Image (cartoon, rainbow, N blue to C red; front, side, top):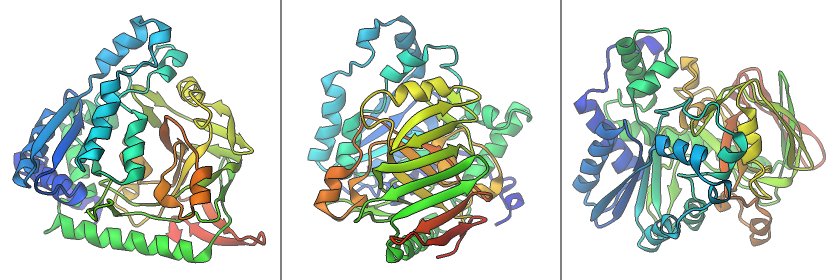
Length: 409
């Protein structure tokens, strides 16, 4: 669909309900009797309430809404004692573990409401406070005990940030149109449209797995990066299954295939091709150099010290836990818009993530023991039409994988 085809489709109450039903019924695939948690922020109330209502329509036993206010976090960064910044109450962690124990569902709303709120704060202090992220979230994902989904939530402040040259009302309308298009809400049956896209993504993952690459190499302006893979690294993408067989789409939108790299075999330099919003900090012009798997140099035109401080949090924070490839067939990249939201921007371009790896990306127990472990998981975008991706076979032969955003395998 051409970008112009989205004009005039607004995120009114009916469309918000359509979005909520997609996220609840297809994304998280909430089942009757489940407890559902919804992670949100001030400014996202309309969609939050629509999702709660949809969850109850789908048979939820209880919907627990958790609102995280970045202004409160800013106060903590500014005023708290430094030795207290890494403290997280046990109940924050336990509530995530309890949800896994009861086989609940998790929904989180992305879309930055305050993308520049943390500008001017001490990067070291920012790196100590990772909330609302807690490592137990990755634990239940790896144990596959929850069905979950992250989805974008429109807001006026986000719209103004993405489209600063438009008057506020036009900016909101433009972002609404784009989100309707990206989320396939313009389809007769958005759920069926996503199931078809997920099937195509799974096909790409299967083609990559068939080649059994030893490494992936990315080359483009400012980028020459070689990412080694583990012997049993598996490419996956699209839908996931819980241990109880609940199929869900963890990210809506999703356009990626991803795997777990060998955290000791990453070498070279990489240039981020899109800005990264980390909490309330926007990082632009990021450049990272890896040696022996570890990020040894962070440079950026803006905000790089925040990521560098975060990458010093623990032993695995400066190593990669994910490599993801994205083709040009999705609906985000062709819009040629920087959304300043990792969920959208990472599904417009190939990316890597510092920090924790997903256990579902390896099949051998010995490789699971080698996966990167960390209290963080931070994606940043490194791909685009001018970044070539090759697969490297065990004998060193390089095989084209992506050219101009098109699959070659």
